[in-house]
Length: 192
Image (cartoon, rainbow, N blue to C red; front, top):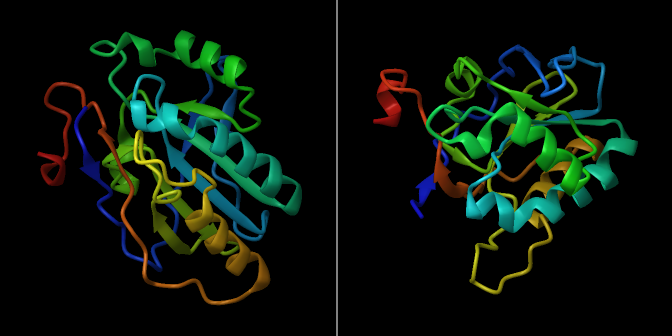
């Protein structure tokens, strides 16, 4: 399995807007500024062993923070033609199997991954109520096979700070995972 690090979009960046569909065809948008206390955007997929390793932690994170006014949205930007495990139909099955309480969205033209400079799965972004980027990087330092606690402590610490109106530590560790599977000729310059 390839190990690709997050690109680390600059802190203070405003969340790029988007409208995407879920595998059922329903439209979802980025929450408006001041609509939510915080917003978590995560780039995931079905087939990546790094994502498989954290699926339970993602469900737990959403279950704990969505009731506190945090929007959680997952985006799959992989080329489903080359990686059929990541097709919308298989996304629907995965979301149902895992009990994802958050929308799992299809970025078919990969424009949202480019706007967020997402490079790997999983890749995480936490925005405050004004949609200003406060955290980007890893869920925690657990990786497949390393035996470390898979509790989401890095992203939970960032969310706790945002919800409390406190500063988020700028010492942030890139996520590591499988690279985004770009469509032929679609990879941005920074991804090649």
